[in-house]
Image 1 (spheres, rainbow, N blue to C red):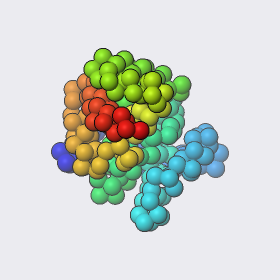
Image 2: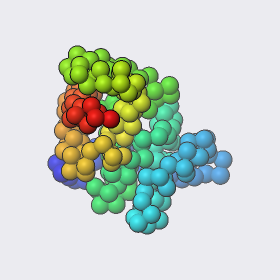
Image 3: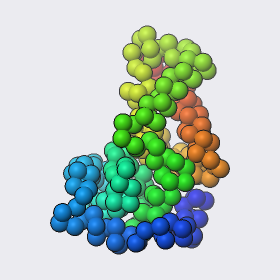
Image 4: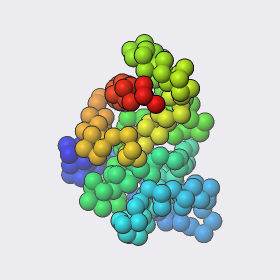
Length: 216
């Protein structure tokens, strides 16, 4: 996959120089009196939910360290549910290389400002859901009517998991489709383009679900 290959070949050196390194972040995260104890408690719950038992304890331990290191790297965010699926997919697609997966996670969240989806209060997520509701009414009004009048389902009930996992959670799109989405998402030129692309994908998915929703 284009973006992942590029990440494995050439991790942005400016990210490496912006702190003391991945090993140092992990050491701080797992210190006896860590400042991210609250984040660690949620990470400990989410890792088993994210990593299938068939994958083995090594990948789960790697994911735990990646998420803990990010909580130290970005204390204004810490850890937010949804990140685990993104980090785990990166870890798998980058051949289990833990450090590259960590810096790739940093790159994904920082360079496309996708970290805004995880800030306390989830304001950016709620704005995106509001926009999705409005766009659904505008472009696929028949489906919007089913969601609103028949099912009483605003997008906040289903789209938050799409947004915060970038579809990596696996129930909305098959793996090959997520791969293609990520390739497109991570090579656009700006955060605004990344959010617009994500919005178009969500609208397309809702449209495709229209015939099924009509039978519910």
